[in-house]
Length: 278
Length: 266
Image (cartoon, rainbow over all chains, first blue to last red; front, side, top):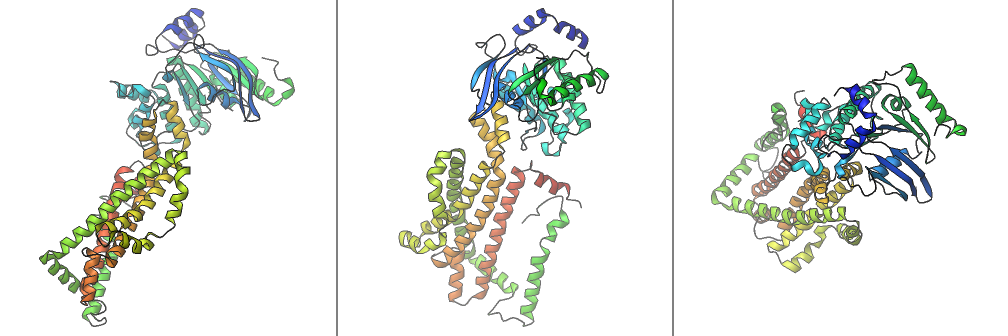
């Protein structure tokens, strides 16, 4: 299926209901994410003040906001690194819908590779319990080729550049064919040129695999370039929920991208107008 | 003793220039009468003394006895230190329960216990092994604990998000992460091991290299005294080289060991 045909198919409800029934391994598809009145506080400090959100399967959602607004906390709640103080969220059809933990993966700002394991075993970590199955190594290697680092499989992580380490981390996140992939500012520590090539890679793997993508970023241009939908979080609430209908592949610096970016930045810096677009 | 690295043939020889030069100067000083052989016999005399003792077999017995004491003490004390370091590093409750006591004991110089140890165990093997155990326990305990406490929490979080069980987390993240620090502990422990053994054997023993040195002193055999000291030096170096070799094999992922190889041809 070509990329544009895939996009066209994605637009129909039949595609999603069919995709939701499919098994994880064959071929994996995104999961809905539903969040109901989610709250999180640390002692007196209330970080999330009731977030309601529905993300359809396969959507690429970018979450932007100033630092400390709660966007990373939301992501950490969704991937199970923190427990909510109140409210609920679920993947798939409802709270009773159970998924293997390898269906939800997260990629952090730091690569977090094991320094004492070579590149390929680091990717194999992503297989979780399937690591001991037959063909695990081949799967890991295929994924490593997908991020363009197949020939570096027996290197130590310490000799790789920052961008290469992040690509290994991406391969590790992808190898279990996740149905939801959360990114916590994964490109934040990379230089500008590496960022651009990593953004292209992220978009490409998302198109290929069709997972639901949640990208927390402080880079509004990145959000507009990659996402179907941009959410802005301010003071623990979603204050902007914007569809990005610009056709892909999007050109960085194109007029529509820049216009949308300007609009989001304006909202970010004008507290009085929050909520107009929500 | 082997050269530290195959990539460094000259570097391997270079490290021996100073010790060999010193021995030549020493021999010359003794030969030309700058130094009385009562103060320090020439190296050749030491070698001859060693040769004679080797022929009678006395030398090998004493080396074997000392070596066995050292290794036994290291094995027992090291195991205790390692296990307790692991347990206290992994469990806050255990640490709270035991750390105060351990820190109190640690601050008593273990050699100060010699009179007590002789009263308890006499001058038999147990006394010396007990002292070595005490000597090697703390460096290994403290560095194992430190290694576990300083593991990057990000890696542990990563391991958990990728569904590692506690067992996998220990073998794949915690233990390899603590290993550099454990090796530091091991090398300190080896130093304490020989130090303790030398003191223990000189004070109370009926065999071993320290005993050999003390016997020789009684009969004014300076060459045998010097020989004993040199054997300690060689054994110490041997232990340290073994630890380094292990370190290089186990920590080959570590940038410190990679850069050394990469810069080898400079």
